[in-house]
Image (cartoon, rainbow, N blue to C red; front, side):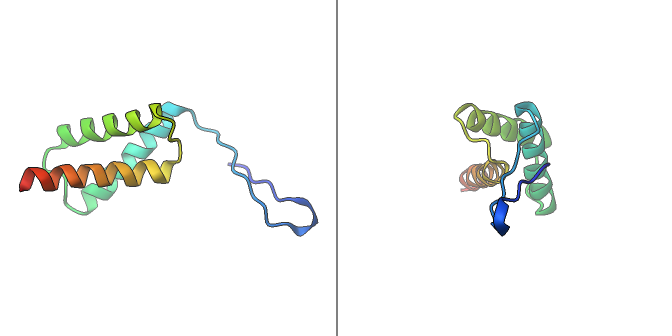
Length: 87
């Protein structure tokens, strides 16, 4: 990860993306998985893995590449689906 600090003491920073899309998807799914696991929401690991992968891949295909946004949306989608299934 490299940061650029502007001249004249400006606090402008820019992130240079160094991971490819498959790494982005893998890392995003892992972060979402860790959260769901810590909160006790994974009852079917195979389904959860497929759901997270499919959800994240679809968002990436639609142009979203911000890891935090991908992670949060994947978790929210999983929780909504789980809540609907429980109702």
